[in-house]
Image 1: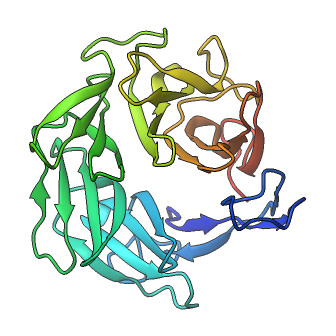
Image 2: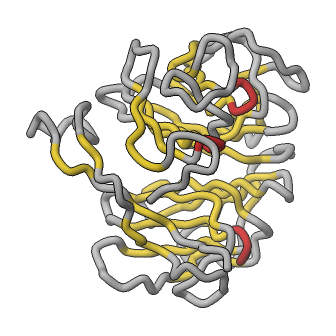
Image 3: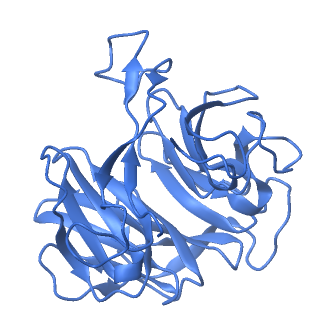
Length: 291
């Protein structure tokens, strides 16, 4: 029986108590054991079950977890302050949603969803019964991020680029990578997956999965800078390498990068200007699962 759950790993202690400015202390030590916060371990479509969840987003102000419950064609919302695992469906009838971003708008949370099979991004306002497609086609759409001006960034996995949609023009343009061209130099991407936009520095972080690295692209830049992964783009299980990373999150004060290192089945933390990361959750290589 396939186990379908979402784990949370907590840090045990940190070297600094001044966490009001940083999201997480740079030297936090993490528990080796995860705690189930969503799903009951069985595939299903009840409010306590999930089916192939592909993306999560935490709205910090409301301490709420949103889940792209891909196999059930829905997005689930779960308050983390409650002990109950009973979720609420806030988006429905979206075929296999991949990643989500929840923006805290004046009129309530607005949910942006990348629809991989549907080649598009949808925007769902609070209590909407239908989503609105943003801009043009987004081929094999996967990663999604939003900046302060409500521009939406979306990765085209099969076209090797990242698009930016403008709410002022309803048009999209390429802002990272070379369309339909893959390569290993800094101007290229290969199967770009997860995205994170640093609103403090106007910088886009990209999980450049096919190149086994994380790239940082400044606003209007023509090429990126590598911030995690080996210089050779070769996949490996050692802590100086990545293997097809699919997710990235950044502490906007410390610039520490957290990576979902997919084929190594781990979450790895990468401090600025370092050549190796440290594992904070999961295994140390292929088939080494989270505890």
